[in-house]
Amino acid sequence: MKVPDFFESDLKVIDAELEKLMPPEDTPPASIHRAMRYSVFAGGKRLRPILCYEASRLYTLNPEPVVPVACAVEFIHTYSLIHDDLPALDNDDLRRGKQTCHKVFGEAIAILAGDALLTLAFKTLAEAPLDTAMRRVNVLAEIANAAGTVKGMVGGQVADLEAEGKQVTPEALEYIHRSKTAALIRGAVTAGGIAGGAGDAHIERLRRFGEQIGWAFQIVDDILDVEESSAALGKTAGKDEAQKKATYPALYGVEKSREIADDLSKKALKELDCYGERAGRLRALSQFLVARRT
Ligand code: GRG
Image 1 (cartoon, rainbow, N blue to C red):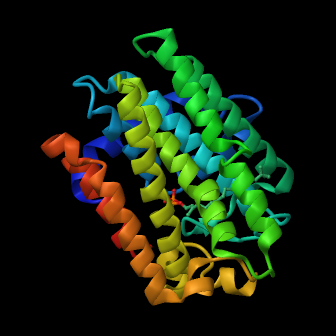
Image 2: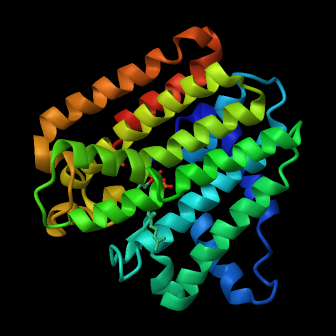
């Protein structure tokens, strides 16, 4: 599933910048650059970079300097998917409707492609043409925290792994979802706001919005794993149950999980009220995130 058509221009801007930021395929050593490009251009929805870009537009009429920041988030997201699919983690053959990176390039190159994308993300952030060095540092910190181990993506992934096959409490499940998935979405939105010039009070508001919408997004992902086919999802469906993962449908059932996701989405949207019409696109994207079928 693609994002709604009116994000077509955002997608063009982001894809053109991703293309510019990544070393060409034939740059030595070519194997790693081929693997990085294979995964970055495998057909992802680009939700995180669009959220970042659109959040910046709440504060600036010139979002162009924010595009590299948005791309850095997509690099981190793609690294996380490459590593998540590895035999030592989820051991998956299918991602974005294509063979996973390690299936095509081998495990060693896939690990290194993930490492390289993470490194490229921070190089990109360090070089982003933002108005002030302070903004750049704050953006870097926001994204590093979101991707890290303390209530960040890697920490959430560890908790997720260690919860497999166990009965989890609602609190533990909340921690996993807020860290594993919501943190990077929160980071994308907040970094976009900071890069666009948001002040402290607004930064907190963006964090709340991003975290709630990201949390709802992961609950919907859990539901889709139960309800949709591998063909529709472009990745192996039904894996959560097979791997005895800690998920919302496993703990609450599908119906209640949908209610929780809808409730979180409503709370997230409330955070955008103060922006009025200016937040129209961000609102539409948030609604798409929760209503999506893939
Ligand atoms: C450091 C070894 C090592 C591994 C890191 C942190 C990590 C592994 C994985 C991140 C956890 C993860 C994969 C969370 C799932 C989040 C999620 C629902 C991803 C799918 O996002 P979409 O639907 O994907 O936006 P597309 O393909 O559209 O970009």
